[in-house]
Image (tube, rainbow, N blue to C red; front, side, top):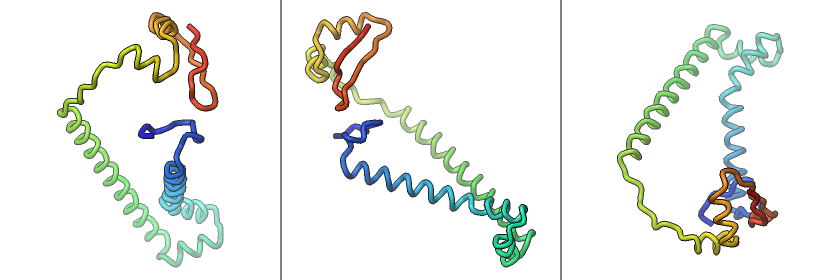
Amino acid sequence: MKDIIINQPHLQSFQQKCGSAFMSVLSWVLWLYFLWPLFTLGAWLMGLKSLSDEIRWFGGYKTLLELLQLYGEIVAIIAVVWLFWTVYLSWLHSSVAPKRTAPVTDQQLTTTFKVDAAQLSTARASKKITVHFDDHAVITEINS
């Protein structure tokens, strides 16, 4: 299955489930890693003894401020690089014309989604519709 499946975990392959779990764990670890200096500073300001010792081991308050300044500069550099990368990609994709795809016929739609041609035409004519699915993401009912 080429499409990414959202909120249908029973339709995901084992590789997609493992990839999702890996990315989730990696994201949480990175968040904790980058926020650790702030946790340390907060605990030191609140007087927690073990983290206060850690601050003193690394040179005290002035060294902590220097490290926090370096930390802020690194975050700013990453943000600027990310901004330029985003602008570059949007410029690149705007200059590349999308591929033309063949139009989909009503017969192909009714076959793919297993609905009647009458339901399809009624849904097209309506301004608002409600589509009901079963547990396997198959359309069970269309209400206009």
